[in-house]
Image (cartoon, rainbow, N blue to C red):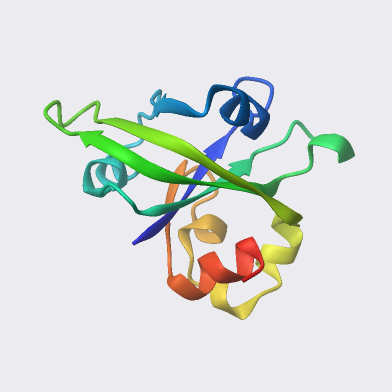
Length: 131
């Protein structure tokens, strides 16, 4: 399974992940998002998505990749997912572009806007990263 992780760039950006190389993905409280974190497995692919602040510079978009390095789900309410940096997406995909694609029509990314951890199909992942 592939996943998209949403983050507010003013709080933690893809550039922060690039600088740190790895991080623990935390602060997730939505039960559906927490369930997705618990289900993650080492090696799974991730897309980092900036939620933006409303300015053009911080437009909502998929900006980079990462992968799951380790998962500690011993606390089911607060699973600890260690992620490691991948690479920037050559051409970031905006939310408007995502919404215009039929492959995202049923995706929680567009149907459940507040969900911070979103499962992706292989086709969705490939389109987001430009494969």
